[in-house]
Length: 205
Image (cartoon, rainbow, N blue to C red; front, side):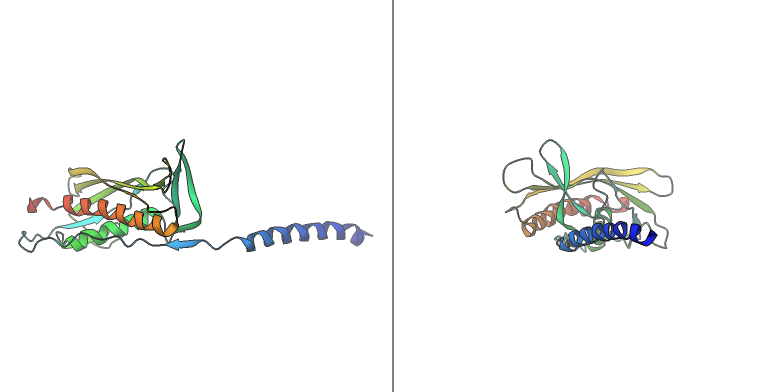
């Protein structure tokens, strides 16, 4: 008799599990995106050569910008994310890698590493990620905004040498993911160009 009483309960559990499993299986697979922005040209070979080294810290992200979701700003300051798209890694890691690549390409430091690098560095670059979203405040396609607060400091005495905001803005050509990704790349390129131009070892000035 106990078996007969528990059988309906077991069937109910199996049906609920089947329903949820079916719903999950029908969800579209999320597309993962990487950014390939245009980086600034290497520094002129006529500039003085220094032996300066710098560590680029992982950016501290503003609320909502620290994950793998591609952030969307809706009217009324409502933060959202594209449902079927995401970054290949979290946004702070994306920006940290791009800043490192940009500074290495600029060629003003002999060594540019992340904060997990094995070597000590003379300078430290801290980053605050303030904007990295597609803004739908107006009509039509979104406008991508990128903003990084950059502070270069001397590691020995923790003195700040330069602090500024590197930013970029680009309106997407259409409200489609490929167009939005292109706008992200162009806005990020603008910000990275400012980073490369302003993050310079003191001896170069």
